[in-house]
Length: 244
Image 1 (cartoon, rainbow, N blue to C red):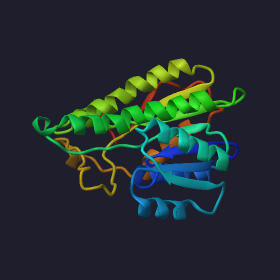
Image 2: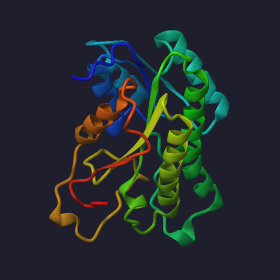
Image 3: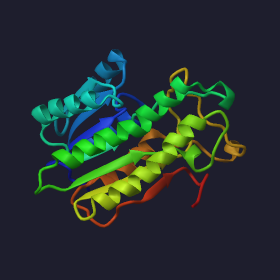
């Protein structure tokens, strides 16, 4: 049993689907949990209701992780309410489905800003703020299409592939103190927003879809800052769709 009762976790993209499932599982392990949602106050309210009760405390807010000042402000609020963040889950994502010829500069920037720049900002804050005597753990949520590319997702694939590089760079920076890993979900049964059509792979019919819980269990297994030896790794949770 993983005991996170002395830890504070921050989950970006934590208001629904995989992010909310991760937040619930971290809290069940005893962590104090802060979640960040993008722009949907109703989803945030429902997520907080779901997280209330049980082990640990929970709080949440809306913030644009691509905004450096917003990220700093979010850390300030979570530290004040729950204590220093020692576990960070970078799950915030913008995943439109657009053919290459139709991707505008604005759309390209918006996707990379949320997925990749947002993870950079939140990770840098943890590295900066983590008390010297503490250890930390960062888990980036990747994407299967970054490893098995699909059509009409050039911006999403590029951003998710960038997370792999960021994971390894941060793992090297944090050796011995802050572990950084990447969990890559396969085809997961989730409720998606209108611009978040799932990628289609030719042999999808051969495999069962996974669940947010499948991903959350893998994330929690990597979350404990007291572990020191698993870092810089890419863990695929995909039911066998990709076996690197």
